[in-house]
Length: 223
Image 1: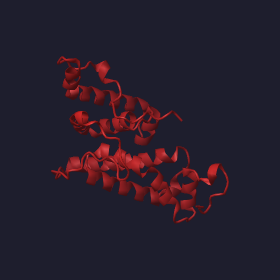
Image 2: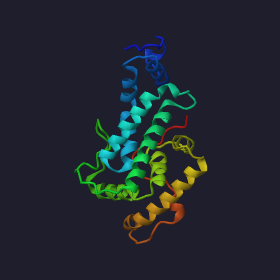
Image 3: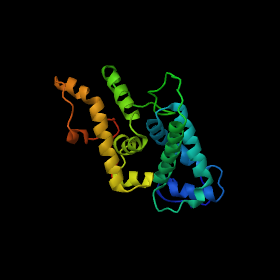
Image 4: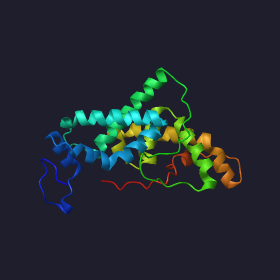
């Protein structure tokens, strides 16, 4: 497939994300759809884990993609396209969470809370560990949304501190601080799990709480 404004050539003639943005800005009707196909699953996973509700996450992703579609001309290439998209999605999630906090509602269970992706299977924890997975997710959902967003990006999605800081528009030290506070808070909530594994009932120390969450997602290599 060729896109308007994208010169042929290169590895496999596959346009880069930046090429697709330029093609979209130049009027190609397919370019942005291809960009969404490339990144929608990861964007959805970030939104769902940040918001903790499928309907809210879907609305946040839709809001974010509409925003990106309309404002693609403002993309200057100062960051990777994926960083730019994730920043928009996370900001859309935070906006929704702030509105939900200001006007709380009681969500109805939809029976599908564990599904983190709109398409394709996600690795499933062994049945014996499923209750632990649910408890960990509940502990993550209970964090203040600033801490939750930082932990989702760094510990769950595997972004580096610098990338997460750029996505959230804060200093790297702020990301480190939010992650540390969030991990410590989760460690207090989940301390009995470690105690059960060790045959005791101790709560992990603050230093133990600073280790990344076991999510099954491999950390991304630094760019």
